[in-house]
Image (cartoon, rainbow, N blue to C red; front, side, top):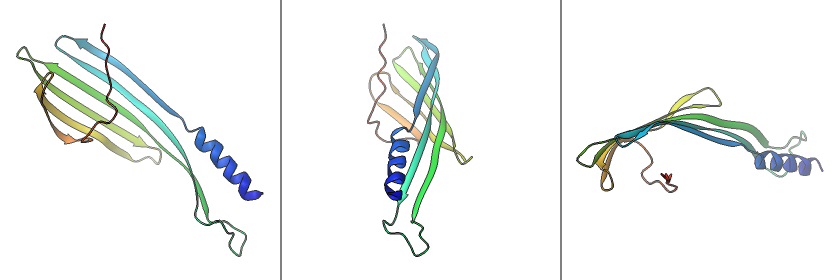
Length: 134
């Protein structure tokens, strides 16, 4: 009964993990764009390493909370010849107080063609942000 309650509580906490996204476009015109965004993540973690209780009646389980706050800066500058210069910086603060960097790169290329990026970034974007302009 005691383990069932702990597992039920862990399931409820895990299913109620929160995520929030926000962003604002500072500049968005024919010469380029600049935006600031970010997200907040809270993760509730439960791990039961052993289903049996030890001799002291304690279980070998662990419960903790992790997460991060990420701020994203992104910009593009278009040239008259159809080229683009880009940058992206995403500093983050973890819930344990450590500061890190998720992505930080700059790039250049053709506006609707090739692109060369240099820095620290994900090599493949599986979920691209699609902008709908009116």
